[in-house]
Length: 240
Image (cartoon, rainbow, N blue to C red):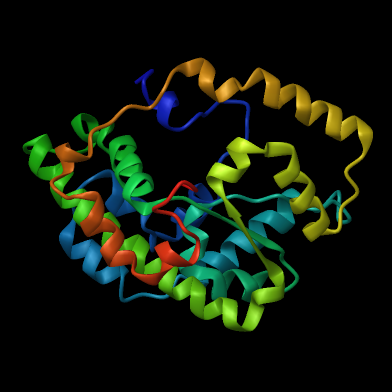
């Protein structure tokens, strides 16, 4: 599926999201994202993912056992639903949360997930798309609420970044991230990042195009479910 890379750039020899380790515990949002399984989804939402995070921490320790002083950079959007577990297994973690207008981010996610629909599921794609957006909107709105609760006790370990700021002034945001992580941004690293920004490799695959109308919800109804979160980061305005 070549068009998948326009929505989520991947390469065989590159790293990817923590999700692919966390799913090994079989208590994961991953399993209901690829196909419709209402019974599993209801069961999963009532479970704790603590065992999966314990396993995840052990895998990271194993992979890095020969370089114990090396600092890890990990990525997984789903961590915002389990920040309490993330801090439980990595108590000294520094967390960077990027924010985008949910009325764009969630349909974009669903568009990506729907690309695997013919391989993973049966039934009309239009019906599946509408069910998926309703489900993902609820899932991520709940995740945001849970993250805000954890922030009350771990606020000093969390940095918020608006996605549009990263696109508009990438180097300024990078400098802010490095200061937050207390890492020196050396001249060689700065030059390498400036080169990558200029190359813009993600855009080489083309633009990710989708139509929210295909998913049966309006932008206003999605934003309404996220409530004050949208206003807090001014996501429905120009910063999205």
